[in-house]
Amino acid sequence: MCTTILVGKGASYDGSTLVARIEDSSAGMFKAKKFIVVEPKDQPISYKSVRTDCEIELPKNPMRYTCLPNVKKWRGVWGACGVNEKNVSMTATETITSNERVLGADPLIEFEPYILKKGGIGEEDFVVITLPYVSTAKEGAKRLGSLIEKYGTYESNGIAFQDENDIWWFETIGGHHWIARRVPDDVYVVMPNQFGLDHFDFEDAFGKEENFMCSSDLKDFIKKYHLDLTLDGDFNPRDAFGSHSDADHTYNTPRAWAMLRYFNPNTYLWDGPDADFRPDSDNLPWSLVPEKKITIEDVKYIMSYHYQGTPYDCYLRHGDMAQKGKFRPIGINRNDVLALVQIRPYMPEEIKAIEWLSLGSNVFNAIVPFYANITKTPEYLANTTLTPSTDNFYWVNRIIGALADAHFATTASHVERYQLAVQSKAHEFLNRFDKEFMENKASIKNVHEFLENKNEEITKFVKEQTNDLLDKTLFTASCEMKNGFSRSDA
Image 1: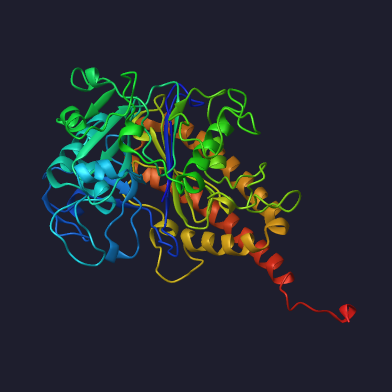
Image 2: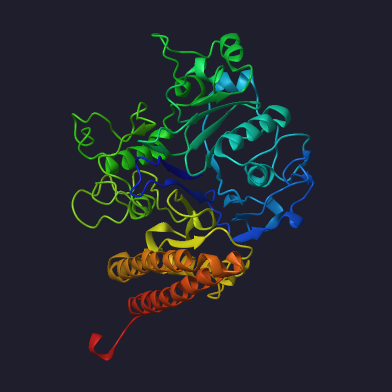
């Protein structure tokens, strides 16, 4: 249950590729996350899934990579997102929907929670078995595709691969098939838990593979099971492989509508009875050229969206309340982590990749940058426990979110000031540290140690600011407790 946005290098503010995804927990669940580095010596060779009996022999030459696994191990690794030594990133996964025709033609591998079953890989496995072995985004899509074809999957997922030049979007089809497309440089892509691709070029996929790839028998598979629903010959993967259910119209399509509406407010009419696209439109574009270049802050804002400025805002206090909370927010209580990877083509290899991270509900947190070319992460993000503690970034954000949500109006100014302070300082830190590295590159003996120290400096500031926000929200919430009473109240 996630939300993804992909920004091509021609659509971003600085020429970077930007890939951002929120990992959300399922309803009634909150998954504690930590930020770690996996060294080659710690990468398994004989890999076994936790949720199934699937066993895979992995290559013996893995690269170092970062990831954001679950703290609780019983559900598997769930690496979420990471960057490897080659400045290639992977985010896995966006849970997507499919339809009865596809699932009948190529059934998902049978899976029952907590009962081991033969075969099948899924979200818990993908980062571990793919990211340490690929040197480009395209290689990532091809490797995962070959694994899906060989082992099958028990769920429908979308996965993004990224390097400094390219972003590839990969979607599974049934149990053993897949499709992938390179994101055009001048567009952004929105993905809200639905099958997304709305165009595919088979000639390229079975030719040069410059912009499209797929499983080797996909054309025959489509023909055999009558999956092509188009009348004009322009194949639409979303119609063939995706879903158009009533549930989509409250849970999925409104998020795509909100993101497209934010980045292209004047391109189409989004509101009112004559709107070109509505929150329940099944034909929302997979990608658009934005009206202006997209920044880190733009991505953070829309990934925190709760329909503010619309009748659907879950925090609405004035006007017609009939539509309030009608749609699933992007910034929801079950946000585990937002990971935004920025790969900067204008920087040296050593400092190209930045991982911007937010933990907990995005409405109430800030996004923080960390250099990815490291051998260890700050304890504040690495030491997440299973019990609540203000000693780590995950839990303090969870606590702030719970307090601020219940007192939204009176804590909003504290949260806004915190977000502005942290995200402004983040850019200041990166500008200063980048400059220091460039000026002293020849004399820096240990690049990893240099960047780890800079990450620690960022963390120290963020910890101070976050504790201050906790203090302010706790004070406000305490003052507004229902059992409050003073002598003048009598």
